[in-house]
Amino acid sequence: MTQVITPELRQWIVAQAQQGFAAEAVLKSMMDSGWQEDVAIDALETTLRDHLATVQQQKVLPADVAVPQPAVDESPLYIDAGDRKVSVLSCMRNPSIIVFGNVLSDEECDTLIAAAKPRMSRSLTVATKTGGEELNADRTSNGMFFKRDENEVVKTLEQRLAVLANWPIENGEGLQILHYRPGAEYKPHYDYFDPDEPGTPTILKRGGQRVATIIMYLSEPVKGGGTTFPDVQFEVAPKRGNAVFFSYSRAHPSSKSLHGGAPVIEGEKWIATKWLRERRFE
Image (cartoon, one colour):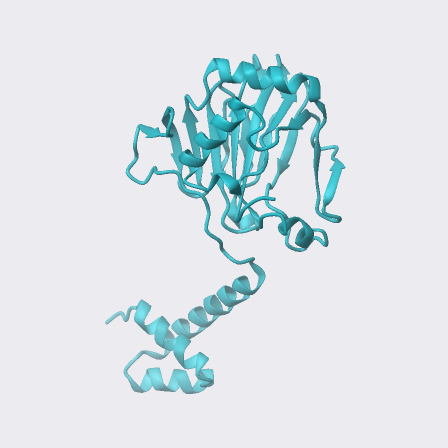
């Protein structure tokens, strides 16, 4: 009769190892209980190997944290974002990526672009080695930041996004506007702050780790400019008024949150980006 290695047996083997029993003693106990020697050896080796790998991974990975989660559990076609009915166009569970439609009106897109244009400059990235900002060759856009509640359109949009993401409005960074001309791109990167970088503790004092990103498309390039997720071979088209939301509960590549802005081939792309933090952003 073929003996099956059950989850209960694996749990028992792990429990014996945690109590300090040697492998030889555990093997003898299994055989005394009627397990065939070859099955017992296989169960012992595979269970302990998998257990050790899990323990090692837990030591290496940063802690898992709570993240914003739009109300898509019941697969709705639309979500009430307070002042606007937003459509759910696509939803991926692992990683958490949601594409929304009708997040902004044409008028709101135009207003944000017009207000941002006089203040645009070469985009910077957070310098995790120091906690400041720096130029990054991987990011060839121009950009600027609005302060929270800086004008009525920004204030309205921030409130809408807070409802949509189920996350406190005060946990959001200032709204960033980015402009990509033909050839401009943002190579694949992570939005969370690397825990191993020396400047990260300084950055985290302002509101904790980044846990989600919302990218909103204010204009449409003729070709190119999509938001790519290389780990899952997924690309979001930059459709005006739409947005892509994605969260990352762990500051680690295992979050599969690697993403980038593909090069604009023809036309221009304007986007608004909102980063959400664990706590109130100061």
